[in-house]
Image: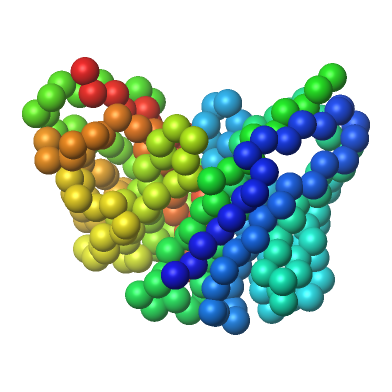
Length: 117
Length: 112
């Protein structure tokens, strides 16, 4: 069964600094997608970034970038120049491309990020 | 604007009542999903639908029912058989089953 582990329940960062959130996953699949979602106090889940497993290049979206290590099954999120609006719960998620009966989006339990002014 | 809407934002249910949560999308997505979120937890899949008139149970389907009569709509009914329904419910959709899922704003259900 697929599992996603976020080992940091809480993290904090100073405004304008850089922070890295960790995520590891377990799967026997070779083709899959990985995601980071952000859930601010409004509780709406917002897509931050997506990584396709077949791509060696790490995905980036403005101040957000990932470090995808396929062999180590690691998928960390780096937030540069942190802003107060980045404060939220961040969820790592995984989905197999050809999951068959195992198809579903599997979430980690989340990391609560606090941004200090 | 394309997106996913959920209503109501807050819902209160008395013991023994069935309630229905609405989810509508205008993204022309084929697949739709319902998730439940409890405090301190990630999301757990209740039901999903890959196409109109077809849906599958997720990990925690007991006490819930769904229908998919239209591509745009995927309502969730929380029945009286659901023993602990107080939670935050999120609806999502994607172009196809393994594609990126986009979420609605959620419904907070409280049992009185």
